[in-house]
Length: 371
Image 1 (cartoon, one colour):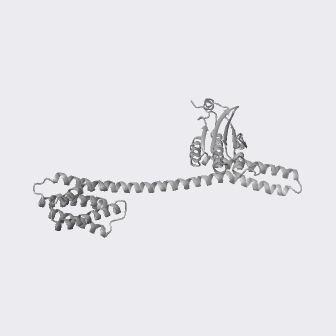
Image 2: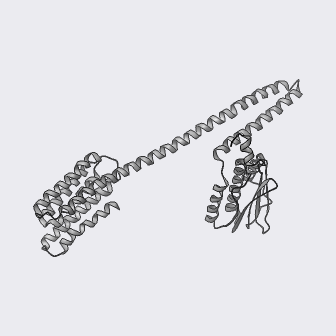
Image 3: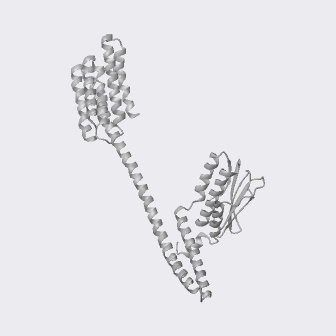
């Protein structure tokens, strides 16, 4: 679009051809020459502005052809055609790298002055064309440098994203190693001891098995906490996401959630956010509903999330899927629970409950020695 602005200057030579001041034998070749000039200019502009490749030989030949055409047409047809040198300057700035365009643009302006001295002895076009030729050429140099900078920024952003992903994978690998290395070693050791004690000392072997169970459960909790720390969702983000998902599925959403919820810990919020995501995903995929109602209430030291719809309801013949099973386990780890039932209008209702932190925020800060 920036390049196309300069096409407005073609009004002068086009007006000269259409004015009837030249015979047909001059108008036809002049029009063909002007068309060839514009085609060569646009070729350079569109194929060279957005590239970081060094100019090939054909680029130089096209620039020379533009300068020759501008010279021939202006000398032959008069000062109205001197405007073509503005395009020569712009093409030099757009098609050549900075080290070449810095001298090519002033050279095009100098060629303009030389031709103007021959066809416009009164010098009336100097202020009208010399400044646009220089300004246009150097503006295109700036545009080309801007394009190059944007290309480098995109490449740098992609590199940063790849490095961040790699760093996260390494961090997760380190944390899992630290979490599981000791636990697995202890489990292996106690398993060997239990195996040796089992024939003669079954009571001691049973104690070792109990220790193995305890260590295994703690390792599972540690791993879940580590993973949830990397991708723990928030209610605000999930609420925005479910509105988009329900709207895309043609389901009307009624959301009754007041934020922030006082006393809701980050772990409890993450569990409710997972519950909200799973419930709405099931509504979109399986319910066939037209309305979905989401409500979050607090009372009795708990926060209760309820998601209900007016769809076909639960299938009593089928057991709960893996998603609901995993969600129930997640809520139990946070001290809460999950329940499902048939809604009053025949649909499906999911209820997730997590406990609230009874300690006020101010008391926590005082306990930690904060002001």
